Length: 458
Image (cartoon, rainbow, N blue to C red):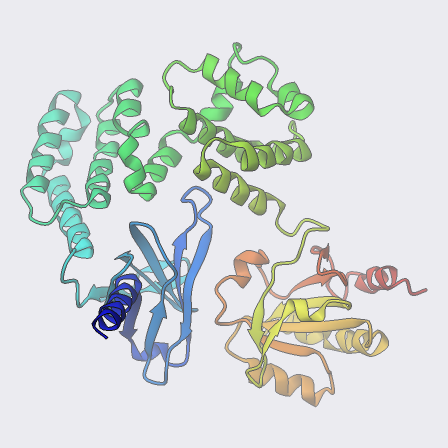
């Protein structure tokens, strides 16, 4: 019995150790979808959803997070609001949200103030706030000194002294955040490239806070690849990329033509980022670049490079003809969840709109005609990006139009997944779930001819 009790206590301890959630309440979130996301690689800024829920009628929500490593910056998002906090795996957090005194828009969403109410052991959010406060005050009092190299050491040493004198600043994540706050100051003071590389780009501890490390790389090495392949020592870059597409050969050339970077992982990082930057240039062949990115996604020595290369491939090839259409699961007017994959076997005509869109309303007679003509083999799916699914459903019912109507208002991935920049947007998906057509396929652009061809109808 004693052994069983100890075993039970151990199970409870392990469960509490690995539990992690974010709980909060904000009345305007009532009945809204709430998401928790992290950046997947900090180079492509690919969002990774680690929790989602629906707030109750009082705006209360609990996000049960998927496992994370170390300290993570977690974004909390809804269709209208956004905020962030820092979390450590194994802790439960209670947060308080409020509207700031002045409007602050991020990613087309209103930014909310967030306070963590129960940080008892490791005050990572408090530590980050302390660092920000020290730096903001320090910069306000010393910004005139940043323009001269002789004064840079004095002010940076002063900053480090002030930071180290604060209690509870022993987390590597916070230390690296503070360390990289100095990078733009050093750059403004004219520090040499070799110093910047040794101090920031080649800093192994940078992996303790990937966000600040990669942000530094993006800001300071943006043109590295294109500048290096333009050097005479590199050779014929177009031939090497378009015809030979030998990644190892190009990496060797990058190493030979560069006098500063000696870090293989950084060189590979700048290589895959450079391939993305030249992807849309006419002198380079897209299939060759995609081939090299796929090679790096499978053969790089570094897991981080594999992930970044994979995400770059997904971004540059998204919605290409013949590629799988992004999956979604959206509620209809009856709140039943409908997946895109449930329509396999039919040609799917996606229509992204909102109720007030005049162009879409003028297209309705043509859409109704298409649905009637090809009903058993074509499914028209209307997805509203406004909070108006009942209005759209009522309008289609009034017109005796049997298209599926889904609510995309609360889904924060649709706009990016389907690259929606204007409404209405139409897209044709084949019976296997692959992209058939994404541009010029509105009902007035001759889409019926494409439907006939796909369905082999004369």
